[in-house]
Length: 563
Image (cartoon, rainbow, N blue to C red; front, side, top):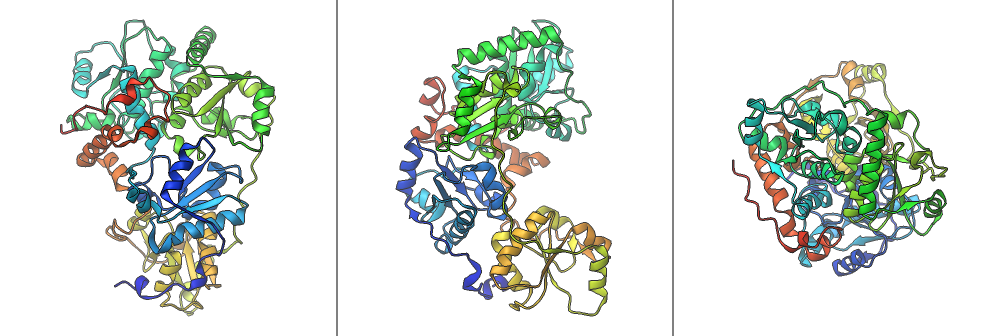
């Protein structure tokens, strides 16, 4: 048995706040009643990714106070928290106390956590970005998106056949690994920039991503716009390319293609407006959009879908930046409230209509605004999250003195990501994360609440949040430092490649990350997971999307990946 298990945590570690418990049956009713609902999984990333309800949004306890204002901006929103169901849902109840302290006044806890949802006959889904991934599989079926496999594409490249190969992911992902010669055009930029790259109406266009979803959506975006060229999605993306035994390009220095000229921009605007109109995307006047924003009974998210550089140069105050392709790929990272409303803005009338069109297909109540970012909207500016009291930060000089003055050294608790800790950390430091920090500090100090504790963190926010839990557990002698300062102070460093073990590294989801590190077995498992999503869904989960009925009528019949 570990020290952590041997030493009990004082009962005062958990803040007291009343949050009623609801059953899985009640939660299921709430998900279907059409009212706004935030269903938040407060476990860490690795735990969330191993199994959660279809409509759950991840809001890890380790950063809860800073994340919840972004995901659930209205404090009156009906909110349900859940965890792994251990010890009477203690983590979810503690998280509920944090939200009540922030002013959230309609917070409940799912009794029994995720296991109770499963026991009630509902599916717990592995993975992340679940609604968007499932939607991509449905969209491929609904729109009969043409595709090309890796071997066929490679043969065309070797033969010198004309084609335009586009990488629909972010620039960061493109630079890590891409197909040889691919041009980075994130899906949210396709409508604006495709004309600058295609020499004639006959040249095929191939869109790829790392797996399936963005290839499918990117190809269909171009088809929605009426692009005359043959448009194909690369089946299984960079993972399929690697599984076919083909070499990926790493370290590409290519950047976004240039913006279109005036004539191309006008044509792009016309195509985007026509596509949005055919899909029934509402276009609100500035007054109508302002009424949405001023309605205190509803949640309205406002997204600027321009590039990061454009947003930094002068976005509309109060809007949130969300590049369109990534917003569609990961709606659950941006929109934490089911049945909320969404306004989509840009400065050119090209990108926002396409993103709004696809958000509506994803089931969101999305709309455009006349004049976009140039309109006279007054978007509420959210106050920053109220953080717990500050903790003293020690610099390198103070840390060096701390080691030299002969006093008992503090217990060192490292709060950085588990993979970072494994690679290099102060010798003797204990890895921890906020849900476990009180127990780990007790183990590190032998149960002595008077012993000083030094937190190693990547930023002050993480340190302050963890320190709050430690103070409530009885510690008062707390400080924090950055890893760089600890190393500069001359503290000995070590690597522990197997510690924490995978089972303890709850911040890391092997299922998702290992496929990008050359692990072909992980890539096969991931692609099998994507192909199997539709078959796992209940009818009410699939019915949340707005796609032709045929897309809901049959499970994906593609074979599993075994190449």
